[in-house]
Structure formats: C-alpha cells, structure tokens
Amino acid sequence: MSETLESPATRTDDVIDPILATVISHRLNAINREMNDALMHSARSALISVARDMSGALMTADGTLISLANSLPIHILGSHLQVESLRRHHPTLRNGDAYLHNDPYEGCTHPADFTLLVPVVIDDVHCFTLTLLAHQADIGNSQPTTYMFDAKDVYNEGALIFTATQIQRDYEDVEDIIRMCRKRIRAADQWYADYRAMIGAIRLGEQRIREMSERFGAQTILRHLKWMANYGDEMMGAAIRELPAGRAEYEVRHDPAPGLMPDGFRIHAAVEIDPKEGKIIVDLTDNDDCMPNGLNLSEATTLAGALIGVMTSLPKQVPITGGSFRRIEVKMREGAAVGKAAFPHSASLATTNLLYRLIGAVQCAFANIAYGLGSGAGASGMSAAWGVISGHDRRFGDRFYVNQLFSAFGGGPATARVDGWINFGGGGVNGMLLRDSIEVVESKYPVRIESVRIVPGSGGAGKFRGAPGQEITYGPRFSEMELAVAADGMVHPPAGVHGGHAGGAAQMFVVAPDGSEKPLPGLSLLALDAGYRVRSIDNGGGGYGDPLDREPARVLADVVEGYETAERARSIYGVALVGVLEENTLRFLPEETVSLRSSMRG
Image (cartoon, rainbow, N blue to C red; front, side):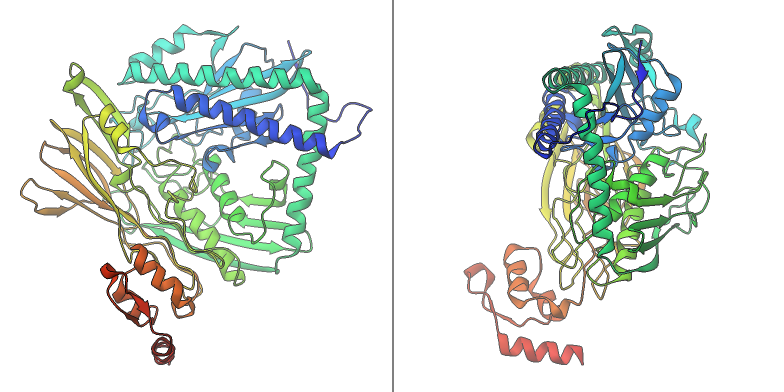
C-alpha cells in the first residue's frame, strides 16, 4: 500500500545543500543513461538497438520531470501526462508493479510508442515514477506499419491501445497481456524480445533509484529536487526577462495529399513574450479540427512540440526541468489536429509530420519577434529514408520482418549564431536519434542500401545556412518488400527567416531495374519487387539572415566540404571563387567578392 507524496518538502529539516543537489542531479542523469543504454544494448529490433528510437525519464510521484538524460525530447516533454493517467486509473501503487501505456488520448505520444511505467514506493510512500518508452516495429495495425497516414479513425488504424494497463505484478508478467500482444503483433518474437529488454532496463533503473535512496534518503532527495525545480523556474524567468517584449504569428502548411488533404493543411502558431511577467505564451487555438486520417497530433506531442520550439529559440541555455516549463503556457484546443486529438480520431503519425511543422512555426514566430531569436524551419517530414519496410526473409525460414529505417537525415535549421546541424533528424529528436548502421540493418533485414550521400546546395542559404539534405537509394535483396512512406516538404520546403532561403524540397522516386525513375507520392504504401529500388532526397534546413552577409571564408569551406556548390557560392552568396576543387587550389577573391556583393545588393 502507498500514499502519494504530493509535496516533497515535508520535513522540518529543509536545509538545502547546493553541492548535494548537484550530486543528486548528476546521479539521476547517470541512472537514466544506464537505463537507456541497457535497453539499447539488449533490444532485438534495429529501430531500438541501432537507431535508439527510445527514451527514459525519471519523475517524482506527481510527474515532475527530474531527468531526461540522452532521451528524445518528443518522447519526454509530455510524459507527465502519462503519470497523471497512471495515478488516475491506479490510485494505489505497489512495488513490483509495471504498467503498459500507449494511449494517445491519455498522455502518450502515439500508439507505436509503448511506454512502461514503474512506481518506486519507499517506506509506504510513492516517491518516484520511472518511464521507459520504445517505438515498436509493429503494434497490430491493419497495415504493416506504425504510421497509418490514411487511417480514417483508430478503429481503421487497428492498433492495440493500452491505457495504463498492468503488465507486471510482484515483478511477474501478467500473461493475459503478453498473450494478447503476441497474437496481434506480426513479428511477435521480436516484440517480446524488445519487451523483455524494456523490463530489464527499467528494473535496473528502479534498483539504482533504491540504492541512491538508501544512501541519501528519499525525503532528502525529493527536498533537493523541489529546490532544483524552483531553481529552473527562476533561471527560465531570468532568461525571459532579458528578451524583448513582442508577439508574432507564423503559419506553415503541410503538403497536399490526394484524398486526405487535397489543399494541404495549415499549421498556425502565435508566440508572445512577456518579459515583465517572465512568461512565454504559445497559442495554438487557431488550428483546424482533427482530420479523418492519422496525421493528427496528440496532446502530448502538441505540448512537446511547443516546448521544443520555445527551448530551441532562446539565446540563453536554461535547465531542462519540470520547473523550467512553468514559465511556458501552451494553449491548445480539444478536437484540433494541432491540439488534443479527440477519440476516435487517429494520431498514428503524431510524432512526425504536423509536429515538425509545428516546431518550425514556433521557431519562425520567435525569429519574427526579433533578430537573434528563433531559427529557420528544419526538415519537415519522413522521406523514404525513414520508411517502414516489411516482408518475408527467406534467410530465416521465410520469417516475417518489419522495421523502420533511419538511414539518412534531413537538414537542421540555421539560427542567428550557428549553421544547421547535419544530423538533425527532425525537430522532435534534435540529433538524439542515431543514424542506422548500414551493415547491421542489412544483416538483420533483407534490404540492400546502395548509397547514402549529402546533397550539395540543398541547405537553405543565409548568413547562417541550413544543413543540406541527404539522399539514399535502397531496395529489397531477394523478393518483394513492402514500403510505407509518409513524406512532407516536397511542395512546401522548410522556410528561412530574416532573408534566409528555404531548404531544398524533398523528392522521392521508384527506380526500375533499367534505371528509369518514376516519382513517388509523399504518402505512399507500395510493394517493391526484387530489382526495384527507391531513391529519396530529404529536405535541407531553412537559412537565417541574408546570404550576402555570410563570411566568404565560410562559403569557401562549405564548397570544399561538399555542403555547397561553386555555382551557388557565386549566384546566391556573391563569393567569387577561383581555382580547382579537386586540386586543392580553390580560394576566394576578396576584392571581386566585395564588388560582386555590392552589385547584387543594388
């Protein structure tokens, strides 16, 4: 039996030791990293064990975030909603319990993100909650993909939905739930291996939390965590008070999709900075209702997207704690596609397409308040480089396989201080997702990846440029392979700000055995026969500032590194180059560059 500790500061001894607080913070992060690493190194599916599409978080009993370590921000910044759901359905929590949660209508990101929640009860008091989320390769959808872009509703989607469902009691599996999953999930053995890896990892985190509590005392830890949350609040307030007051709105569009969104979809964000109150408001209420497809955002992803947009737009770094987010108010509407998806509307793709557009809209709105804030928009959707592949692998007795690829990334946006990040991977992950090891993926699944390369000149030009996009070509090794793709950014590429150019548009093609190519629509589910391949080019990120203000030496370096082309160096950046790249004699001419730029400005 347990009671929930609502307020950590219950002792009369409320003395705070800043050194101990630092030790506690670092120790919690170490525990979280160990938990994440344990899962990554023991899972079977490539999207967990290779790409690290999973995240752990440590929270107090009431859901206050105390550690996200090396986790993906989209997975964690709304995870307190899952803890609230757990406490609502299970007011009495015990040691040895574990709960499975993937309900997007009650705090989860989207159905593919199976989350384990484990309470830690010390001296009959619920003190901590551990969460461990992992994107599954298959969840029983009506199609072999966890991204059902054409799902009319959750019933058509077909996903197994668990709402804080008990899956362990007294540290033993609830076999009814295990059987249910094994019957509905196509690659059942792979799923069960990943589940056992998740259980082992989160129980390791639980053990480490208990060891830490024995050493320092749970009440001492919680008292210092409350102080640290308040410190994060104060630091965020101080950072906001240094910003200019202002309000800006920004609107972007998702690409059209025949039958689903014939005119595309509008995403609107309004950002207000109130330095006097030390507060930032992100208003998302002016967005349209949920659509009869799987692109709708859940409450967790809408909230996380807004928070990511704010935190990446500030010029000063602040602690990432539950306390820091008190200064950010996110307004959203029930039943809106960018808001709280209302049951039974599908939220199958809630961690990708509209999310990336939302983050970019918030960042661009910040940039419009004042130069120096915000950024351009980053790569906007999942190309075939992030496609879900499935079929039968004859190497292992014709065994069914399914896996999502993460083999090439879109470009990150530029800010007023730095160029875009080439391993950005999307606003929801911000570089925390790992790129596939081609050799490992080819050994696990019957796919052949022919090439992955940077596309020169695809980043949005600017004083600081967006990162270039990447191209990948791959196909089945032996027999037919199904491919599910949900790309965006082919019609509306990521925007630049303050004179920065948009990133390059995404493109996709099916390549026949004779080398001929046919364009592939952004939202596609197709079968690739042996000998056929798909060639996919991701977006580059949007630029920041006038390209003619970029330092000529940086433009030269971009050409040398293969990020830019010599033609664009002259025509867009106004930099006069001379010499031969292949002979290492390429250089820029200062006087001619000044003259060229002067004429281009005129």
